[in-house]
Length: 268
Image (cartoon, rainbow, N blue to C red; front, side, top):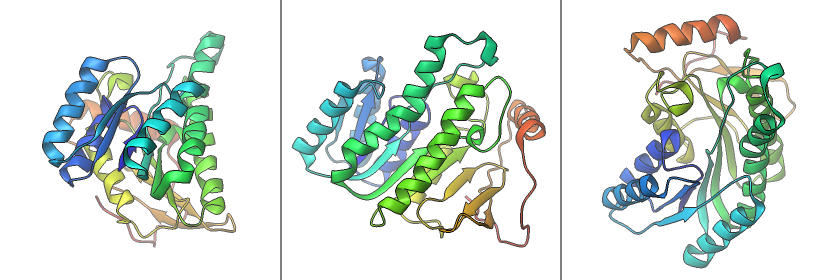
């Protein structure tokens, strides 16, 4: 059983399809657009050839989280993989953001995944994947609050991995992805989805709590002693020139050089 938050569009939708192609049973969740979610759910059923579930979920609302988890457990009794994908951002300077803008990002991007994970933990059997961002590894102007939430999500991933040694927990950090939050400019969400599914299947030789980056940015893996250890790069080869322009701009603003370029790369 694969439970994906925010799975009616973007990275979540692509991830739902990728798991379904592996014949997994997928729980599709949505916040507002039920019609689109129904379409996603039907496609998942067709791809997997098995049953699944479609549920409304607002990760910023405690009652909604609890209702969703109760329904999943009553129907399937377990959650093999939890993917905390739902997210939002306000792309403007901090001085121009409202209190509601800030609250919405913090509740959706950080508080929501923490509470969702807490509610699911007794029933998770294998893996938790938190969808982070390059904005959680480097400060990016006009994404101040989003950066704060994504940095926090990585810290949550690392700490939870130490508390829950029997579950594999990872932070998958895409760079620039073609979704509604980027005006559909960037790498295809399907590339991120393939990384998520591979991570859920144990396809990367990194310990629980690690970062798995998607893009041409270097990944710093921390050991249990919080010392910088190894560098991993997940590489994609997009041909979209607009994407390349945007990623170069992000790299100039945010990218750090590798700590140890002698370590091998992990390729998608």
